[in-house]
Image 1 (cartoon, rainbow, N blue to C red):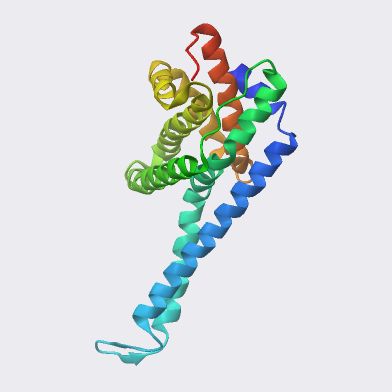
Image 2 (cartoon, helix red, strand yellow):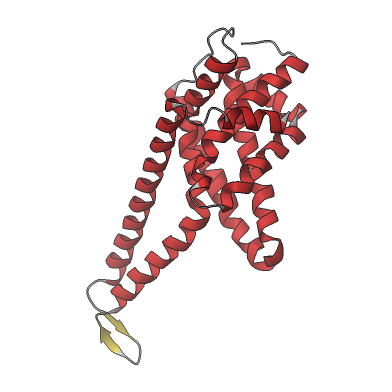
Length: 235
């Protein structure tokens, strides 16, 4: 089921609606990271000022530049780990477009899906963004302690998070939030393994930016495959 769903999603990667969501997600993520860095830099400059008096050294004017450069380096390092998770969270606001594109092509006989209100989608996105950034930030400690296993920790963690998010996002359009969570619990192993498949390319630059799109498309197929085996009431 997982690989069949993945290859079906791959076959639709050129869909114009997929490209639109990709550009929106990447553009908003870059904007968010730039704003975050600008905020950090402003805090550093506000705290240090044009000059600072250091013990034993006296007044110096280069401390602000030093801390500003260090904060830029820190943001670059964090962006390596957080770029794709943040993009995944932000793109999730628009992934119903991807799910609809998949259903239009592969499941044309389905009745119209129930669109999640924008306010609710925004709330879910903020919650997911907090969870995925927090989890990946805490995981940096595990990477440092268990360095040889860092890739496996990264794949397992993000596979769980991405699988949970994408499956819920797809299912909620068809069966509502409560039934979507019930389906997720019943099929947690399939969803986690499919999420790991999505997480594996996260280590590949450029390719990893396609993962939110591929994840939503793949989990749309997985959801419908599950429903064909164990139908759930819609609503």
